[in-house]
Amino acid sequence: MLAETLNNCDVYVSFITELELLGYRGITHEEHNKVKDFLNDCIIIDLNESIKLLTIELKQSLRLKLPDAIIAATAKYLNMPLVSADSDFSKIDQIQFIEYQF
Image (tube, rainbow, N blue to C red; front, side):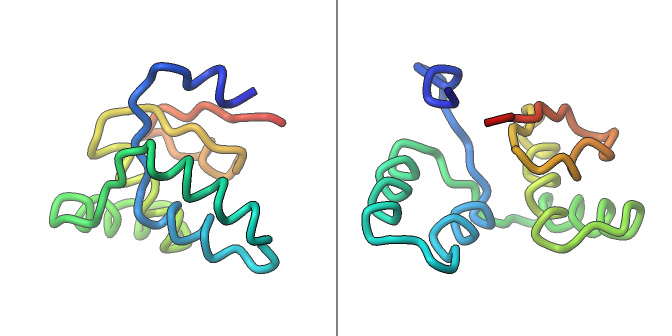
């Protein structure tokens, strides 16, 4: 379970991931509250100039969708592994990717 893996770790989340989670179409009120509780325990990383430049570089070189490029650029900027169930991130050599499987 993801919670066990992340137990006692600082969890950094791109603002894009925050928007994607909370903006998910069909999210129930209960799920929304659980996501908010999770995000309240995380460190949300907003866009800055360095992440913008890395995003442009990744988007141009790998033809990533903008949200994925921002998320990957955030991981690269923080020099931290990116944990995601989205296997599309595996093609990005510039970051350490850990695929989460349910």
